[in-house]
Structure formats: structure tokens, C-alpha cells
Image 1: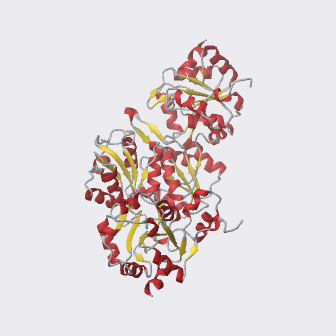
Image 2: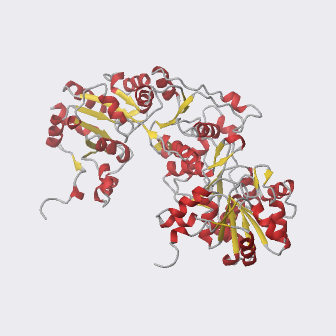
Length: 312
Length: 312
């Protein structure tokens, strides 16, 4: 048989002229944030310049993050603080923002949301005008209050699960009770199983809390964040995007790269975050066809590899 | 083709003479507790008499429960309170007791256990002489203490997850950090996803908390409770049991009946608990061979159906 074997496609290491050709062919660049343009509170070297130069070259830039801990307005501050001085709120699509948009525009929720999540999710729901159940943790801690008798709000029509450092058994049990009503929607901001912390520790992600609730409720959550297509549809509903002229750059094969594949975008894995080149090769060399969608088209060491092509 | 189709086997409703024949053929009777001999704090009508009569007829009776909330000694009190006056501590095998036995006798743990679980688990570990990490929740709540800097005990060599109404994000995050060490064992008392509460509510089970930790740690727990064989092996290590002469009576197809099948026991589904006859028929009529192990050999409305045969 002529031609290359399909299992060897993808994972092309981008260099010099290839980077220029790729950038010439694309009009929209979608960046994941954590592990791509920054790690925690440290910008990836060269990333602010890459973002600025892309904009100066007339590209449209979007930030697509599964991180639901901040509202959009806080993200603008973080971008500024880390040297990304020309990023607008409208360019930032977080799983918290998109979850609120989904409840308002797609589900057209008539009722309240019970939230397992942090301030970022709460603020975006509030900004979108989606009513949430006010948690009364003090009442929940009162003697005699337990999972047997804690009050449940009859207006709850959706449960939304995101990253929540104040997650408790009581929250899990309440969410579980709400989900017994099959008409109650079950959403998760994102499927991320864990996140790296500084010092080699890790922290459980939204996907971990969602797994607990899925098991307890015998239901499956609708996941808003990558790799689901919804965040792309959310951008596309506000900007005119041609997938063939769009590039997704991310550090996690199972979320960012799969998201790009699911949406028909070209994909670039950057090695400054979670996934490794070996993992990408494992997906490429796997026999299972469904694993191919986690193979990035291209690989760079860092987004800084784009700098030279942009500075010429 | 002659003979019955294999998919129609099982789910035989036990009546009169069949019950007598079955009891004649068996020497050991293993009961699940919740949903079988009691529901919460109410004994199933006739269950105490059935247990007493079985013993008077020379049968050996064991209680095999995934419930890990009580130590064995508390179970004896509960049995008494509900009218089961001749049950000995040695006949009670809970997932908490068996988890402690596993860590001591099978894993021969050299180190401490980090426990997500309640008093029942703690007490059984203590009785078995297995050292546990003392949780300092007050220290964890101090300002400045977080998942980034909370102390981790270097002697932890196992994580054990059971039902825990005091489950928090901090406990999940700590367990997750301990499991980064691939030599740290990962055990779960039982896989129960949820439990019915009075008043139509449900509460998340050990399986729900385990799912959160499995997702966050990218590892799979070794599950001690039913349907795993270990609880049978634990009984068999203390009593001489012939599986062919043993009967398992339970209310949950995916735990009790599957456990019986896994251990080569005859199985009886009782309809006073979680699973329904329709669910049993669905397993029986399924095309998937692995579902056959969830089909009970026999079905009774209640363990009280054994009364008449025993009273004759």
C-alpha cells in the first residue's frame, strides 16, 4: 500500500518556516491559559509578547479556559498583572462564564441553580441574571441539622458543579437530593480531574467532584468546558469564526487537543503544562481510533516558539 | 434445541416446599443487613424469628454488610435493640471490620492509614492495631492553612475511603497527595453509590467519595466490601465454609447477588430493600454474559417467607 500509515500522523514539531506558514493560514488563535500562557502567577516567558504580536498582525485572539475560579473581570486583572496588557474581557471564555451563558441562553432556565463551586461561578451566574440558591452554611452547621432534615429549595431546577475548595458532604448530599428530580438539569463547568499546584502537590478538580455526584445520583453531567464543543459555540455565537482558519493551543491532550479536534480546529500542544510529548506519541501510536482525536497536529516547546516568526 | 434457554434461568420465586428443600441443602446462611433484616431502625417483620429459628435448626448464620459506620460491638447492640437477641459479635462481618483485617493480615501494612471515614472505621482499625493518622481539623481551619501547605504525614502508606458525613475538600486533597506515592495503598470499604434515607431522601455512599478520589488521583481503589470476594474470604478464614452449602440473602443485585455469584454461593433476592424484581428480570433477560452474575437464583418478598418452613 502506498502512502503513510495513518497512525504516524500528527505531533509535527513546529519550526521556523512551518510556524510562519501556519500563522499565515490562520486568522483566529484560541489559547488555553494555565500551563500555556502562564503557570499559576508566573507568565510563560515570551507569552505576553506573542499575544500582543498576534493582535498587531491582525489575528483575533481568544482565551478558552476550563478554570472556573475567577469571573471574567478578575481575569482581565490577572492578564494585566502578568504583562498581558491588551486583553479585553470579551476575549476571555471561562467555563464559569460559558456555564452561565448555557443556563441563560440554551437551557433558558426557569428556576434556581444549586451551585457547588466558588466565587467565579457565583459571580458569572449573577452577571447573567441566573438565580442561585443562597447557601446558609451556618444553618447547616446548627445542632440537629443533618442530611436527614436540611431544607431543600423547591425552586431548584439545575445543579452546577465546579471547582470548590469548600466542598462538603452536606453539599454533595443536597445536590444528590435535587437530582432525584429527573427534570433538574445536571451541569459541570469542566471535566478536569486534578490540577498541579506549586511544590509538586495536586488539587482535585471539578471532574473529581462531578464524579462523586454522578456516582451518588446515578446520572451523567452535561459538561460545559473543554473537550465539549460548547465553549467554541459560545465564542462562535459572538464572533464570526471559520474553524478551518482557527488554531487551538493547549497543554492537555484530553481537554484542549480533543476540544480542538471536536470543533474542527488545527491543534498545537505546548509542553509547558500537564501533558508530555510521550503521552502525545502514545495517543498517536494507539490502535484505538477514538484516541486519534487527542493527537495534536503540531507540538511546540513553548508558545515562545512563535516569537521569531512574529517578529520578522 | 431441547432444554430451557439460559437467559430464562434464575429469579425463581421461592414457595413452601422449595424453601424447605433449599434450607435442607444449606448449612450456612449469609445475610446482608440494611434492606434485608432491617430498614434503618426498624426490623423487617419476622426477621428476628427467622434468624433464631435458623440457629435452632443448627444452621450457621453470618451477617455481611457493606455498612462501615459502626464497629462490630455497636452492631451487637443494634441487633439486640431490634429483637435479634442471639447474634454474636463473631458472626458480624462489616466492611469496616474486613478493611481493618485486610490491612493487618493481607497487606501487612508497615505504616499509617489516612482515613476518610467515620467512627466505625476508626474503631475497627484501632481494635486491629492498625495505626491511623490523627486528623487535626482545627489546625486545618486555621487562617493561612490550605491545600497548598497543610502538613502531610510521611508515614502514611495507605488511604482508606468509607462513608464519611464529615467529608471535605481538604480531606479529598490530602488523600490525593498521599496517593501520588505509588507505593501508598488505595482501599475503599465498599462500592455502594448511595443509600436510601427515611422520607424519600438519599445519601451519597462510600462509592461516591471513592469515585471523587479515583478521578483526582488517576488510580483505582481496591474495594473490600461486596461484591468483592474478600469479605467471604474473611469469614472463610475464621470458619470452615463450603460454598456449595452456603446461601447469600441480599437486597442489592449489584452488590449482594453479584457477591454471592463471585463466591459460588446460591443467592436469594429479598424485595424489602433497594432492588426490584423488574431490575432482576432485566439482568436475567440481558444479552450481556457479565450481567448474568447479578441474577439471583431465587426471589422472596421478605425473609419472613422463610418462617413457615422453619416453624414446621
